[in-house]
Amino acid sequence: MTKFSLKNKTAIITGGGSGIGKAISLTFSSQGAKVHILDFNLEAAQETVKEINNTGERAEAHKCDVSNQKNVNEIINKITKNDKIDILVNNAGIAHVGNIEAVNESDLDRLYDVNIKGVYNCIKASIPSMKNGGGVILNLASIASVVGISDRFAYSMTKGAVLTMTYSIAKDYINEDIRCNCIAPGRVHTPFVDGFIKKNYPGKEEEMFEKLSKTQPIGRMGNTQEIADLVLFLCSDEAKFITGSNYPIDGGFITLNG
Ligand code: NAD
Image 1 (cartoon, rainbow, N blue to C red):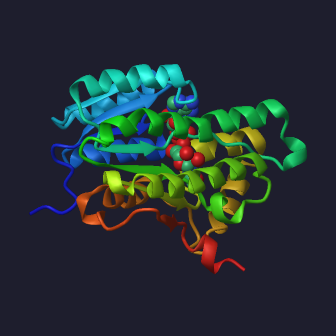
Image 2: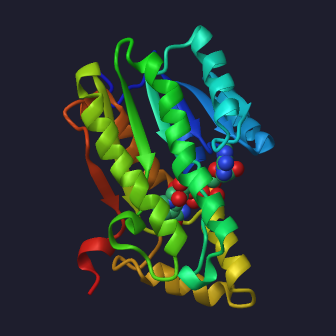
């Protein structure tokens, strides 16, 4: 028997067009899941789907802004006409660099809309399907959820909310056989990290990359496959005793720094 099989399961993965979400999408499909990718970058989502289809597995791309409830409901309703949702991975998220003085109201609203309301929208739309036979929800929190990260005021705020939403959902739906967990990655090398380094530290990209790598006591950033493998475990039946938990995956950031 193959462990961590997702055969005959349907998974929704938000932000599956890039970085961690893309690695999760490819990993889930390699374990037999049918994958629906919700991403506002349709071309990127279609590229992931193409890679999955080339391996003979099934996947679909949907253009979706997770912060828009109407948009999310339309797409998830369409998906549930044919498929029961077994797994939801709330991965889509955006970054912001700056302390509270550097965060203006529109930055705060945007971070809230995507990183908090986006998670709320996707869970709310998926629960009715999951109530029929159970399901697993996995949220992308961050080390910022538990320790805050310097110069990441708005981002840390949103990821703190992702952690507490996880606890709340796990409690409210335990009797419906819906598990809900989150993971708290340290820095992972993705376009998200390259993007904010480029935007916020122009001309100092290499220096900042080195500096950010060294903030993990293990001396490097994580890679997307390492994150996807933990997500696979937590969403598989092998993890069916796990709910309401947060898993750091951070090269020692939370416990070994300082
Ligand atoms: P990424 O920028 O490489 O990919 C994010 C994807 O989400 C993109 O495909 C983007 O189009 C999509 N997206 C963004 N906003 C969206 C929206 N409103 N609706 C639909 N799709 C949207 O990011 P990543 O580094 O792979 O990060 C993925 C998740 O992991 C995020 O939630 C991030 O906060 C979290 N995380 C990342 C790191 C890291 O170091 N990379 C660390 C901890 C947590």
